[in-house]
Length: 133
Ligand code: AMP
Ligand code: ZN
Image (cartoon, rainbow, N blue to C red; front, top):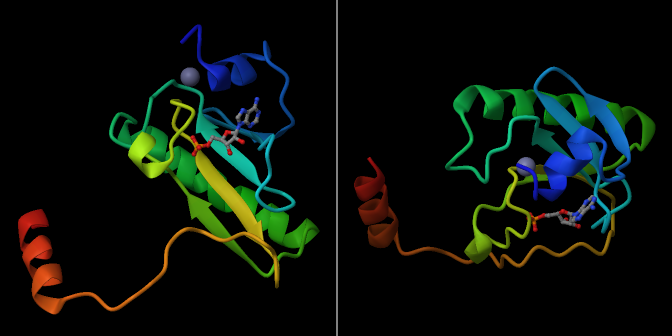
């Protein structure tokens, strides 16, 4: 896609701190890191989002994200990780080339995800489960 930011980074037309790549994926540092080491893994083949990406491309991204997290675990020694994908604007997606955020987490880091867990309604959970099944 000619006007896609991440296709531009993959092609080398737009600068990016590339940290890993393979036949199907490229990983680079996020320009606005949520924590030190925050990176993105993208498929080389353009797909807008989670619904559009082909399963084998998604598999390659997941494998690359695991490889990257393992590498970060060795060199950054974080306390943990969040892997995050946002699909569509309602879920905070802002760049429409599928990407998996790999976010190393550190004890006491300032990252807050806007999710406040609270108990669900059993019947409602079961009804939604039934719809999904
Ligand atoms: P999302 O909001 O899930 O679509 O994530 C898009 C991510 O891309 C954000 O975390 C941005 O900071 C990041 N981003 C935007 N432009 C660039 C860029 N030129 N290089 C690296 N990361 C970028
Ligand atoms: Zn693209």
